[in-house]
Length: 475
Image (cartoon, rainbow, N blue to C red; front, side):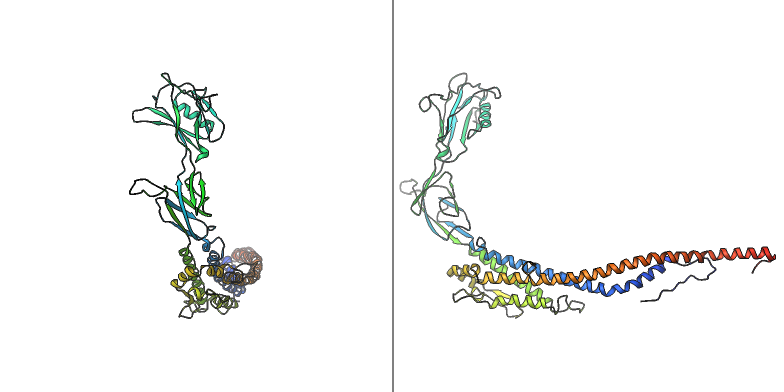
């Protein structure tokens, strides 16, 4: 601890001394005891930063592995194709679909039912009512021009829509200004068939729509029909041309029944091949990312074994956690499982690089061949119990930041946090002590300073008393 001196010049000058500066010098000396604690805290925080960075990289690697080990992940993804996209277009194939080839023959496409009225003038006033039903539902009647709607086609259209009767009503306007009422079923396929009531099919309440001149016809324009197809010889129907119920996990769009026969000019049902395959491209991309992120963390670990640009050891240099990470990650290269063709990372084209620094490289051709010829074994390698996927996932858990799983990084961070708490407590106690001493010192030195500053006045008073007694002035 350094020395602190008071420099106030002549005692009789009345200038005193700088209390704040003197107190600050004393406080600075008292704070020197904190220096080793703060140095250790800085070192621990640097360790924490390095550990957290490695923990994040391990978490990324774990996420990469999860994409390959998850039953609904990348390994389950599928792609599909159609032999004739003019007839059938594939929309999607999800993880529940099974790789294979299916034969689809489209007999007819689905249709949504619609109806339309005769053309009338836009300003014609209507009378009567319309009655219709959707599929096998109940008959429904809408009166023209009730208390809330005007007796025009637009008013009737609004009344139908407001009643929520299972159709979308609208008014179509021709080029000459004439208008028609249009009804489109909200239910696709046969179940949405619109039937207009007349004297034959529902004489109890036939449609009586009319204007001032004559009756207005309202009839079904397009019947509601289900799509009909055979899938691998089994007949399948669908209310929509977007088919989700024919091949498990596969959605496709029906566009036509087939090609035009060049000799007759007719279109007939055509056999279309729908091929569902494993999405090996996405799997290769996932493995490439795994290899890249594996190398990222290996390089980060290697960088901790050296010195920084100033020549100081890196924060984790020589620590046991660094050795644990190295050994745990590099053990992945030596893992072998069973006697199948695909029993190690090497059989997937993943090998140690020539630099021998712990990084790995991927031969994409080897991986591609393994996926094409031994897909089930690759799947087993990543997803079966006690195979690479589950074993290496446990390794990553044992190395990472999960406290519940006792990860090496989590334990190291917890140990550091304990030391940091002790050091911070020491600093806080010392600062509290210094604050108390600073308060006392400031009060005492202010008092001393006041005394020093009052000396000239006291000397003057003595001088005046001396002069009064002796008649002489003091020199």
